[in-house]
Structure formats: C-alpha cells, structure tokens
Image (cartoon, rainbow, N blue to C red; front, side, top):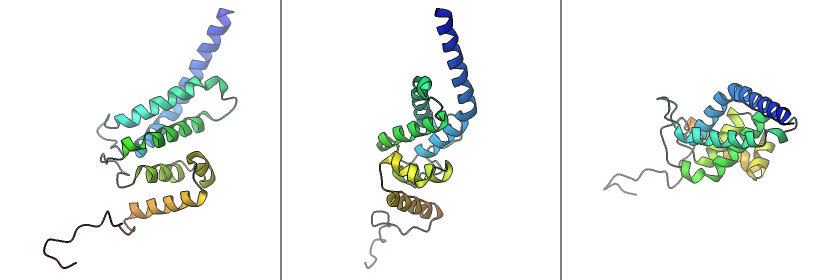
Length: 164
C-alpha cells in the first residue's frame, strides 16, 4: 500500500516538474510583465518570481484534481487572480516594459495580447463585462503607442508665469 502511494507521489512530482520545465519561462515572463519589473539584470524581477511561485504552488496542490484540465491555463488563471488581488502592491513603476500602465491595464493587455486569452474568458476571469475589457485593452494599446490623450491628472503643469 505504501509503495503504491509513494509511486503515485513520485509520478505526480515528475509530471509537475516536467510541466514547470516547459512552462515556467513563459509564465515568469508573464508575471514580469504584470509586475512591470525589469528583466535585466537577472533577479531584478523578484516580485514576479514570488507571484509565480505562489501560483505554481497552488497548481501543485491541485495537481491531482485537474482531471485533464490544462495546467498552464490553471496556473495562468491563478497568476492573474493573485496579481489582481495584490495589484495595489504593483502600482509603483519599477522600470519594466509596461510601467506606464495601471495594474488593471497591464493585466488586461498581458492576458489579451501576450497570452492570447479571448475577451470573453478575460472578462469572466476578472469579473468585468466584455465591453469593459475591450475598452481597457484599447486604452492600454493607445497608451503604449503614445497616442492616448493624457487625462487631467497626467497633463504636465503649465510653466510658472504662463497664462492658463
């Protein structure tokens, strides 16, 4: 009995290790984009690594209950959910590629464009209407292209002594 259980645990660990070996790089890049941390120098994306480690730990804990579900999709959902829950920690720009975006804009942009998650799935995952996801994505793309009209808060102050 114990040998059978030990064999199952060993097989489970090997399956999970194989999954991580294949998916960890892309998932880490996704987490790094979400946290807006720089990729270089190595180790500069500490928050992204912590976020990914927590998501992978949750996936491993539920590994036996996946029953044919895609573990990459499950881990990506956990990553997105954890990021959304902790987004207030990731608001301060850190020098990453998407630092100009708000946490919500980064999350939607990364899920939609980098991960290729359809609007409907992104909306369901974040609990927002599809139209809102589309608007956030469009606004994020415009911001990254530099074509977005600045909001009142983002407009630079007029020089001192200039007429309003």
